[in-house]
Amino acid sequence: AQSVAQPEDQVNVAEGNPLTVKCTYSVSGNPYLFWYVQYPNRGLQFLLKYITGDNLVKGSYGFEAEFNKSQTSFHLKKPSALVSDSALYFCAVRDMRSGNTGKLIFGQGTTLQVKP
Amino acid sequence: DTGVSQDPRHKITKRGQNVTFRCDPISEHNRLYWYRQTLGQGPEFLTYFQNEAQLEKSRLLSDRFSAERPKGSFSTLEIQRTEQGDSAMYLCASSGPAGPDEQFFGPGTRLTVL
Image (cartoon, rainbow over all chains, first blue to last red):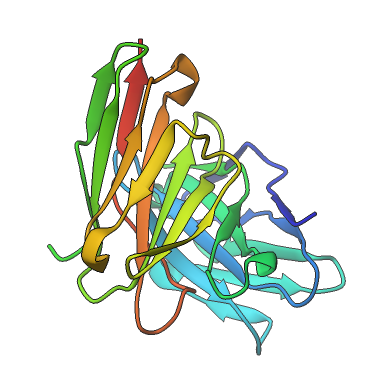
């Protein structure tokens, strides 16, 4: 079965410190991986994606993610957290059983809390 | 603002009533998706349109749910005979000519069934 797991419900980090939000996946074939962020009362916003190529992907707002095929992980990182980064983060994988529809399978989300 | 819009933003209804939600995708986006998000969970796929054709439906989409996208523009999601378990955030997303791999999400419609 294809799935995404985010093992932490919440991550707490002090402003200015590096942050990591974890994601592991299970798919058949090569994965297409995504990170989205959700702020209260707003829709999900695309942060970054990995399709192929360099294992370190850079995205919006200074975020980056590292694809690790051997560990089937795609952790989201940022070198220096901001209070404004506090939000709900979702990892997702494209459902390759659906052909070219682009249907996404999401993890359950991780709340990031950045404290001043 | 030329993003994805959804209407209404909130809907409170009584069990057994019918509700309809609307999604306006980004213009020229030919792909449109509906997802459902319950509290503490990630979004779950409901259905997918390419232009006006509904090409995939999830098993989550029972026969009480129907979605349309006439003329390949806006889309509607109707739930008939609502149940308390239908209470959720209903999200619409669209993607465009560049392909399916960057979906733009609307703000969602929060449904509460009493």
